[in-house]
Image (cartoon, rainbow, N blue to C red; front, side):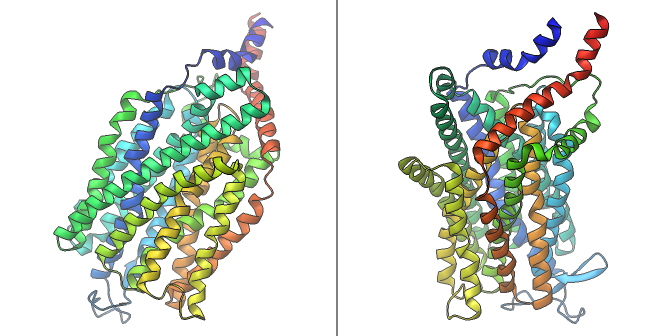
Amino acid sequence: MDDQKKVENFDMEAEHSASLVTKAELRAWYSYSWAIEPFSVSAMSVFIPLILESLAAEAGFKQDLVTPCDTSETGYVCVVKFGSRYIDTNTYSLYIRAFAVAAQAIVFISCGAIADHGNWRKILLLFFAVLGSISGICILAAYKPDLYWVVALTSSVATICFGASFLFYSAYIPTLTRYHPEVVQMRVNGSSTEYLETSERIANGISGKGMAWGYFAGVLVLIIGAVIVFFMGSSVFSMQIACAFSSVWWLVFSYVPLKWLKPRPGPPLPEGERYILYSWKKVFRTLCHAPKLGQIFVFLLSWFFVSDAINTITSVSILFAKTTLGLGYVELLIAGVIVPLCAGIGNMGWLFIQRTFRLSTKRMIVIILSLYILLPIYGLLGFVAPFGVKYKVEAWILCVWIGLLLGAAQSYCRVLFSELIPRGKENEFFSLYQITDKGSAWIGPLITGAITDATKELRYSFWPLLAMLFFPLIVIMTVNVVKGKAQAERFEQEDFKEDHHGHFHHIHQDD
């Protein structure tokens, strides 16, 4: 019985023995955002879609399936073979992205819960960083249009690794918040309300600053990429070099968290468990107990559509600007610089607004999503009005608008989610979060790709984007954060006892 009491008190003992978060550790965590985010901002959002579309078009045909595609024509419409059928080259990159993000779900579930034990969180973070960055560098292997499938393969692996590494990076937020000196001090000396307010403020600050530094790094890498593309004549190969550069950046700056980011280890695997199936079993058991965690799953439902819409808006905007508005590669790169620059500024600006008016994280999400909805509405106005993304000048305005909302939406949503996670299960639950964030992103590209194939008009894709933003806005307004935190605490206690039930039985037999 004494042994059982010791096991039940394990969490309290770990709470007191864990070291406080230092400035060096926070800087190491921020530095990984500096390392990884440029790959998303430049390679995944700008270069890879353009490289895939351009190589596919150069290797493709016109609608008669005989005449080679002439990419020098403005607004060209060409097709390329995809399996046993031909698809529009404008949608080829969307289909490849759909495959990559669908494959991410398998990786997330397979690794998520494992990282909550031992030192696996940091090990897996760095493993996927190395594999992903090397895959991005291998995009250079596609030296001729017929090898467009090589870019499809290497970019898919890089995309999968990016999502997995970002999972373990984001899962540090609750831990860094919990052991932050200000939070610990308030937990000991402050009231319950003061502790919750401090915890929320610190979490938003950590997440927001990390996101901002990542976007600022993305701007720098994009500028370097734009210089590369400009001096190499805006060729497709120049974009491949720029993409490879962002991969090298990811690889090199991953050394900082390797050196100074603490592993923050979790407990060993429960007795009798094996790594191969453990994560799948844990996720299955969590899903079976979903009613006990109703609020966090309501939030995940809303984030499922929000994240997909945000990701798809970025991809559709690039293709819309290139094929409909006729923006060249250099102009697209400038737009690619404006968006993350404004995202970094927006992160800091929204944090200032939140602290000035003492707004909750949930309230900030509602405000930002309401402003996001105006984007597809404006695009749809183009059907009936003389404006609505019809002129190049509108593209620049929308770039600023998207940027100011993009980083803040991502940061506030992951903070709200982290507040609802049962303690000690950060990686397991962030695997579910990443499935809805990155893993759900195949739906938007698939729908918009199918609509564009059927109508030959990319503007119709704004309709599903509008629905994918409006529905979750209504859903997220129903999330009860206080109730969700209480559910997380109860689930944590119940799951801890269930994990150690076999251990208690073994102790009793020994006695």
